[in-house]
Length: 194
Image (tube, rainbow, N blue to C red; front, side, top):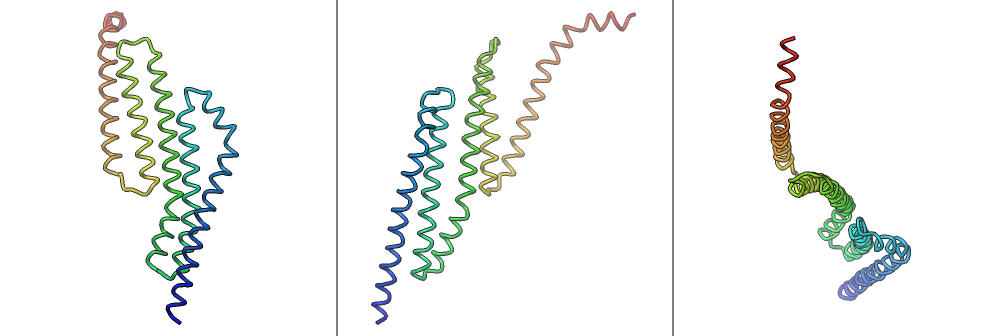
């Protein structure tokens, strides 16, 4: 009799998981249907198109994973495996944090690319180096924010990033301040003498 109940429980548990797979596929098809117009718009744009398409795909995968994880949690809890039930429940609670962190990284990728393009439009000899530097600084800031949102301890990296920013600020201040001081020195001397 115990073997029959275990077999029945296993069949129901697997059935719930199979229904979850089917539900995740249906949700994916619904998302594809509703995002057709958005995907056409994104493919027509060179500046934001690839990042936006990636964001739509990632969002779709996260929604599908959430649905599948919900059914997996029910499947495992029906079978009576307490440890797996807790693990899947914790994973289901952590998934939205990952979605938000992924979105933050995508926004950072977009903004860093926009800032880099703006730097490349300058008429400055070192504009390529500036563009790369700005892109890296912005992207690192957004990646650190995403890691913080995901719940990882990144205090050491944040402090290192601050030190790098302070150092860059000091370098820029010296690079701009010294030439300005030299160029304004005669004017300042004239003002002081009067």
